[in-house]
Image 1 (cartoon, rainbow, N blue to C red):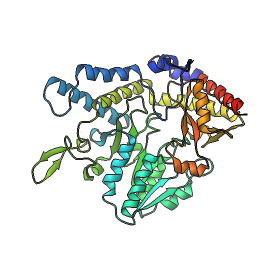
Image 2: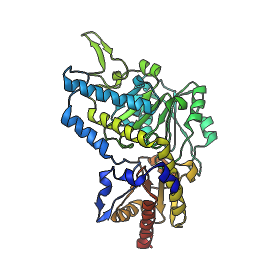
Image 3: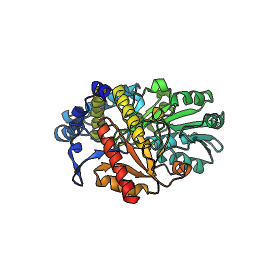
Image 4: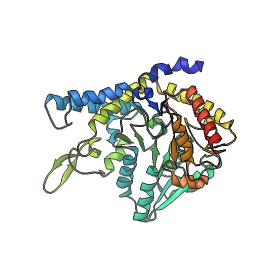
Length: 410
């Protein structure tokens, strides 16, 4: 704990999050559902309120003072995001979620594919990076292939090499599994993808909030993530794409803002990134995301990553001591700060409900990864996921809660 205190003052950080003072069933909230959504610091909440109270106006349309202020703040948020992942300004598109970002890619890239072309994903994908490609394959007669996982929840190397071939057009993989916590080596997999002249997409919803991510280092062609999983508001997502690829792609939506010139005969599309941001965007949410990034930068993504490594190591050690608990996924050194588990002979919903009675919030269900659940041979699991404001003491409370589950059902 000494090392963590030197890196981050957790108690000071916790004071920035009003919701952590809430009591659930009369007990202090222990919020361990960060993979679903994170809580918001006061700075983010205030920045959204400030927009609505002081300069609420539409962007890129008005030359009055409020419009100019709103436009400047919204574009500054784009700049903050681009700097955060080491992209250029025009390579960052705001969407409403990771899901919308991936659907945008499936639509715009799918237009170029023909029957028989191959797309590769993995068995561990979230539905957001599964269903769009599945439906595209069905619609256009494409072949969808799956990289398999081993008994430790890691991608099989031979399956990677067998599935990615010169017939592959798109490979879309999660950086970190939202169920297994597995950290995939997307940098190395990307090299294999590009050796086969395919496009490489990374679902970074569970990685960008938790570790330093550099799109140039990864050399991915596209990368998607969500604001609400990194202290920002809901309703704002991000799509990164290499500039030359975005320029060649068709827009996902048509209408206002994404145009440069419209006549009765033709339409000329706007410059990047606005070409892909049709209509009135989620302005307040974009500004809120920019403030969230300021907050994360102040703490340091390397510090957050280290803190979570300590938490996951501690949590794995504690849960492994309980013989009735089955954990899914790799060892602590190969996973991020989340654990999916089941108490033997107890449904995950029952586990979650009893934990909730103790003020402990965890996720229970298939975690939007039903194909993966079928591979694991389970219907559902409970999931505890950590973030920068969580503590080892909260993990101790989780352990106490799980022991109560065992006591109730045994």
